[in-house]
Length: 342
Ligand code: BG6
Image 1: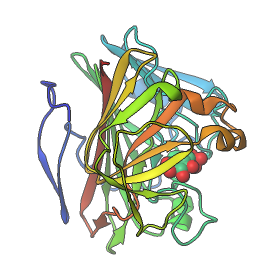
Image 2: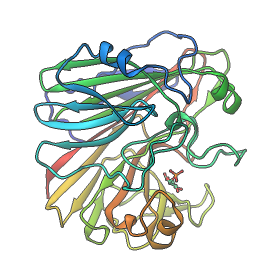
Image 3: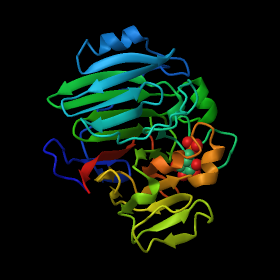
Image 4: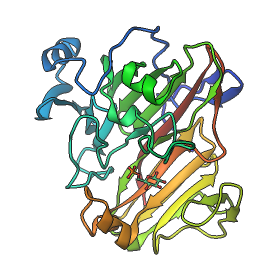
């Protein structure tokens, strides 16, 4: 893990039965406000602009009608975040090629997932465990979140979003919750998702910070950090059948794996002469996904050869890693993404 940044606050978060080190400070609890989210926007462009107080680090745009995106510029990096899904779409240190991949065929349509950046998957990962008719990866990525704040502290720019239940989420997931997404951009990109049980029953959740990393070419990358871990191969095996990762990973075909790992991952990108690191906390599973040739062709918002340009490395609570949230308790999952020399 990268522990070099002076701005990192190493705190221990006690969250019900789980305790995890936080990679960076998060927004606190926000209380349980009423119905503020829907597949229609809860905040207008004017509301967002007012909330951001005309700070020059922020610009509110609407690349598609009804789909606001906040452009963030820091002295050392730049990125964009959609209100829909509290989804980071782009981010890169200044004068560097993109760190995140966004499909050129991605659609910005309320209620539909956007292919690229960092979708937040919650409260389940992949198909719903009992009801395959429910949306893949839950609903957090297809709802409008509420922007709570946008702050600037030196080179660090922070946006905080919240998602609470409404009638549509209740139909998919009956429990009460409050999600807080803290997105911090500086020389690194930091994303934290705090999930709090605001109800009076106990439930389990899965989640993922589904990071699409842009690479020079899929044939010329190597992933370090999963060697020596066991994984669930989502293409072939049942949850209880572990496979052992003997070597550093090179993607040579379709890969869809849930690694049982708390380690960081380093992607060595030979074409771009750089490495990308994915650090994480509050996560005992790392998902690595690349659809390869045939599946790419079947994904309508991905070009046929799109698989050559990205790999997903996802800080997750997936597979058997499903935190239990008792009433009033919370769990936080975090990821930190940045560049290193090759
Ligand atoms: C990955 C899953 O995280 O996301 C894959 O492991 C899935 O199984 C992929 O295909 C993309 O999912 P979606 O719903 O965004 O197409």
